[in-house]
Length: 410
Ligand code: NAD
Image (tube, rainbow, N blue to C red; front, side, top):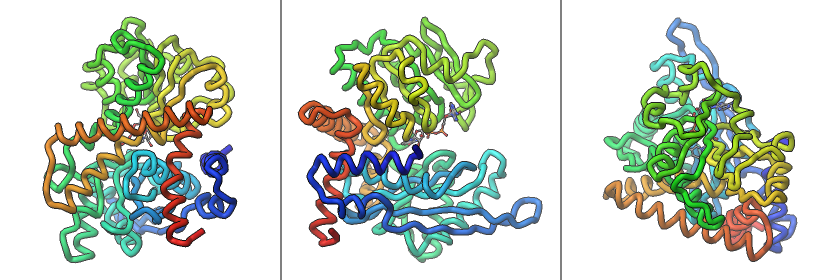
């Protein structure tokens, strides 16, 4: 089942559990708006290449839509739609005044020069500028986009609108109104979820064996935070392979050696595969790379007691069922990876008020939001006797459905 279909399946189930009629599902099953754009870019060799991009706005009943922009060769319209729905759910779960949005461009930034990337980023903003804005739809980084790309996009938007618009986009460099703590926010949020989940399963994090798939923004910082908390990170991976050491890997060394795309295993010869990594003996497994990694084919072989999804969509619905039946606690993506959008919200608030917070203030606020959200979803899953994914979807759609009803849309 593809990502959009499986998301719609769980949304339907969540709305039914909450007692909503079919018309609410009809409203929420797809984004309200999806814009497809064609972006001509003059490449360094003088030729013009035309790229395809998307911006999806799932639901703006609660407030402006918000969500990242992905640069990847495998971007599709359906993927962008599904990701925009997940952003709505995340905003509902951590209780932000937003709906979900998402953007993507079909491209491979690893094969483009710095200047080509700048021209593509500016071209995308010109193409979507009518649809976005600080009170309409606020973009952010996602896979293969970073603070430099956000800076170009903000500059282009400010030039079009003829006023400084830091609140147009989040994930900016600190000197352009970015927030302290944004870079590590997703990993911090995942770390808090791991700590809370471990408490529920009486696992002491000191000495606990952790396996992390993916060593990019989310996976590498997470490995560092786990290592610093006294856990033993016994396995990590990237797109090319995985490293395993039952005594714990030297995370500081690996962090130092990884490249900007999260690649590090190429430096080693004694690697294992990503498939073997997922099936390692460990206490906590964190998929932090890509979709569809734990499926019906390997869910029976997962040895972890807790799986915390830092990536979007790493576990299929079939695998969710198998893991739950096996008594493995699964903390779903829409909760575990919501630290990023939470600190993006903090950045937007700081831009709007023109008053900036210290790193400690950001961390303290993030801690409160994540602990409260985890507790809400965990207790909802216990009282309604559902897995944490369904509980998270129930919590995530509730405010959006209420707001849509109050507005008279359904
Ligand atoms: P990234 O591009 O920085 O890193 C991705 C990592 O995954 C790299 O180490 C890469 O080598 C690895 N990888 C790629 N293909 C792989 C494969 N086939 N098998 C194993 N590993 C593979 O991306 P990121 O920002 O760390 O995001 C990772 C996941 O977390 C994505 O699903 C993303 O949507 C999700 N996420 C990220 C954020 C954020 O703020 N960065 C927020 C929410 C969710």
